[in-house]
Image (cartoon, rainbow, N blue to C red; front, side, top):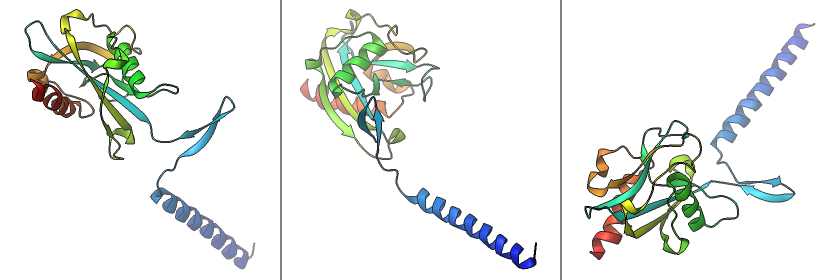
Length: 196
């Protein structure tokens, strides 16, 4: 090979590397956009995920306000050992209230009628956990905590380590996932404390 061929070949390689670096750098600075995909012959759009959380309040036999919570097990995708209120992703063909009802039943074995599930708010910040859009619901029960038989029998394997009605005044003794402790306080103060 002649020197000129080697130089031209080297320049071509360096140009390709430079273009690849430029494209990768430029692409990395661009936001991820929604895109379509086909599933069973039907077009869907891939975008940010929607999660639901259900904050359920009831009084215990000692007349103390509690919130239903579960401790995350080793099968949970994140925050293992932390506490959270029933939560999970919205499935296809279900509304937010149905997802809150389903997740509550799956994780705690507590069935809440859909008409008793109330909307609280939506968190859509891209800085939220995994950029999820989270819909928050709450329910205030007339029944006592002890009226419910808690079980993780319907949960995914090792997703739920333990279940408990956490006394509101003692909730700060636990580590909470997904900022649930603050949402518990916010909902409790707005919905229950203001109506006492």
